[in-house]
Image (cartoon, rainbow, N blue to C red):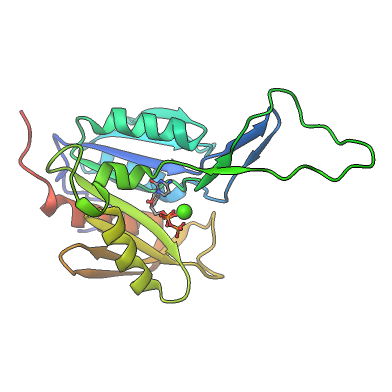
Length: 233
Ligand code: CTP
Ligand code: CA
């Protein structure tokens, strides 16, 4: 695919993309967060629009400018993200979970600001698990989809045995494709560029050399398109 002259191969398709990172509030002024910039998700949205898709972009705390033509849904927490994804995914041809979802949230939310107490150590923060949105959409180990025929894509940042960890995660989540990044110095959060391997359930491995996030986004769509089901009326 020549850059800049996108094939309209997502025309008539609805794609849902999550981007950014969730924030899990402790009190009105504090949260547990992560360093996801949202740039990869926004690149996915722009490239899908260029290829003719209707795009729902569910963004968590990115502060990035809205891609023209996308339907934007703003969320804060993982629980809100889950609700928005499930709603938008109901009639979607593809769902791409590029957002970094907090695995845990504080068990309780203090409605007033948590204050220091003289001469006392702070109380520990109890955490509870957040829902696994990707596994829910993709069907987890059973692969039973909420919407049959929907193409589901996950992202994973891994260290150590990156590919083996990615394969395990692909299977555990039940998604069709998993974009695996090795976490390292150059491939840091917030950068404009990325390097990855896209793993598919059929065993295919597509390496994407270090380059713009738009390039990786187009490779993802190149792999999504042949896996799409028939167009719905
Ligand atoms: N994900 C999700 N819901 C969660 C956690 C993750 O939908 N509660 C999605 C992410 O959006 C991403 C994929 O799952 O597309 C992989 O995220 P990752 O954090 O690598 O997976 P985890 O299952 O949380 O595994 P780990 O323990 O390695 O963090
Ligand atoms: Ca995680």
